[in-house]
Image (tube, rainbow, N blue to C red; front, top):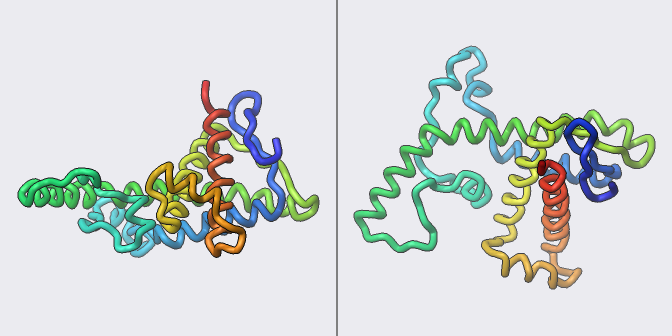
Length: 202
């Protein structure tokens, strides 16, 4: 079980994590939450309908990580459309973003919060023993899977990973490269994500 997820009887998954691993995942999830930001209802807590009727942004985020997490829906990065097609794509993407990004942010926020909460519940046990076994319900496993994917997308954006060839180069980085810790986290989270996917397969 160390370093990888295994299935639990009746559904769900479990993984053994030491206190350092718990701290790393929790820190990354908190950073992701800070980057995603609060929801409209948190900005206006006295108005319960604020989030329901709030429109999202129409422009892509300025931050590279957020652009990776919330890409344009109608833009093909490998295509070279003409001016008219480009304008149409931009208009469609803006409209789609306006009505979907808030919900997407809320979902990613809830997944990251689920990770933080489950790790916080494990923290005291891990502190006493130097580690603990995290046990997830099927629903929590799905939230973790989505959150791990978001964390890897975020780190990948910071590392400027765009394809498999970039990933291959990461394995050859010298230890003194300042990106090495982030690379190690990226690869480690990838292993966790892969074993969780396998665990959840029927």
